[in-house]
Image 1 (cartoon, rainbow, N blue to C red):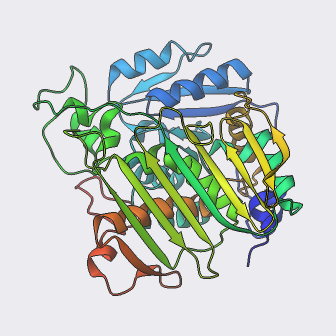
Image 2 (image 1 turned 180 degrees about the vertical axis):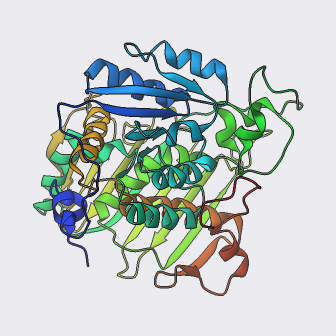
Length: 430
């Protein structure tokens, strides 16, 4: 069993460093890192503005997107050195001067780009989730080992100061032994009505946008922002916003293996007529071999949040419980009367973005692959998303064998652990 400190403590990276070989091609701290930006949508704006504002001693050398309008918008934020622009990620990863790339494309492109980039010697910061389907997680892990590259998933709360303070409390045993971890997404959503297919915007390389996904006519809902509603490109609410809180549930519970059983229920509760492949509410429970449980709940109607937060966790221990939110807060309640324990206020500046990116950049410089959201850790959380969705799409309740990493006596569910890739955009090595 991996130690609890591996999941909770600040020494997680140090404890793994001994078994992860340092990478080649490191750079001294005073030398600029050359970064390629792949996918110029909403979250990338946050990354680029942060890199510029914090003066991280990096140079943004490339901006890549299939939509030239997205590149133009991003170029306004990439001040200083003028980046080169392209619609083809291959231009970025084959540039020998580029040290690392940041990938913030739709989910279906994460693994193909990352694996190809690693084969060209590039380190990868991949927005969550690193994988679109279960087996892509292993493909990324193996590529990181094979090419000896730093890979970091965008699970920013892994490096948040409030997470470190909560970790010390949980390590101290303040709430006893944690038996159940609960995660939720409680944000209001609006109905997105279906619209007719149309022509792609001028200049958009739509075939490349589809990439490994099935060939379909262009529809504006299957494009910027709302692509998340479709399985061809995204993973629904659970894999888009929910993955953050599922990752923290996995962190709090300290899981080091896949579950043995998955139960999922959901449907249309509010968003009738919604143009989406996914339910508007979903409840997933994962049971582990030692009997511990994780639960994820998604509600589209709770404008009030849960326990005061739109996204969060509760860790239930034998002596009390902790309410934790990636909004930068936690509260501990102890004993049979829920006596108030240690509390951290709602501090919006403690979401870990700066610290998480700094860890990645430092790892690229130092050659230390053992980051807090390295692919081995990221896959544990992404796997829960994929297994939960597969359970929902099939029988609702599935047994899973962590040793073989297959479902027990369910061929249909096992088929969904991977997917077909449209030629010529196959997954490298698949």
